[in-house]
Image (cartoon, one colour):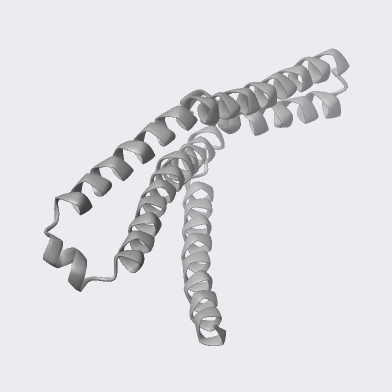
Length: 165
């Protein structure tokens, strides 16, 4: 995951250098940096796919362990509890909870946290590489604004959808 994100951060820099070399008339340098750009893109995609392949067995093992512990807990409950409760509703809620934990781990650790770290790396690159700190701060501000708007619109859409259901 780290190698994929590092390649993603340096990708635009290689493309920028290739276009600068092209403007300067250094066609061999432009081709060289274009090849670097393509290689970094390939490396980024390759390591992203490898991350998915590695995470799949981990995810399934965690899902099985969580299901087993929940199943064992339900069987350890008293007969009186089972007779008073609606077991079908409980099992459906349990399945949804297990799936929600799986989704939370997948989106949190494979998408959200790496994306935030990549955003921080991009802000650092903008601030240091271009020696203009307001640019990095502006990029960070607008990414945070985008995240906030996404959350607010998702909550609004959820409220509208539950109202229509």
